[in-house]
Amino acid sequence: MVKINGTDVQVLEYEGQRVATLAQVDVVHGRPDGTARRNFNRNKKRLVEGEDYRKFSADEFRSRFPGVLPERTTEDVTIVFESGYLMLVKSFKDDLAWQVQRQLVNGYFRASAPQKLTAVRQTPLAAAVADSVAAIILIGDAVAKVPGVKPGIAMAATLSCIQQNTGIETATMRRVLPAANEGPQCVLNATNLGKLAGLSPVATNKRLQQLGLQVKNARGEWELTEAGSAWAEALPYSAHTGHSGYQVLWNPAVASKLREAA
Image (cartoon, rainbow, N blue to C red; front, side, top):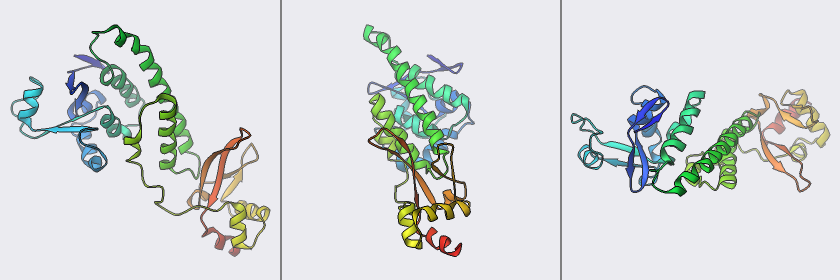
């Protein structure tokens, strides 16, 4: 048994990896029975069987994991690997959920029987990696709240940053993100938008400001308003000089609004 969030969790191992049932996920997160199953069914097409999860008949599960499943249970049982677990609980945003996720990842999925000294030595490293991941996710959440930044783009950048800084493979999770070409195409900077509207770059930015679509921040850079985020995207960039920030790219349809405001 392993204690997670004050709850005793039966350790299950399959093909050398620790796994958890959907029922166990509900219990340790204090969620209503069936929450994890609902998330699983909703996102099953995005999960990879054998990599994120595995299904067993009730009888097969009992033979592999004796004493876990009640005899009266007849439906199939789904187990999730670490990647599948993390994808299932993406919607759990409260502080307790974050604490439980860290405990489950470090104290369960990545913990192995203390048979080798190397396993003990790896514990501080695992904790450090988890702290790095948590910090990157917090930064990603902050970036996603910047007006004009699409959540999918922010999450893709977050996952890339996690992989670069920790070596954790995130390709599986990136598969669940929406395609980059979904939604309106925002491809024009102020200069090119101005060409469509017959305005100079300076006049374009001023008119966008007058329309309430953008404002200047404390650094003197243009920043989207809530209204502007419906017409543009703010994409992160990093110049060779070391300066970084956000470039606002506009939907070509905004040009007609600029002309109407003349």
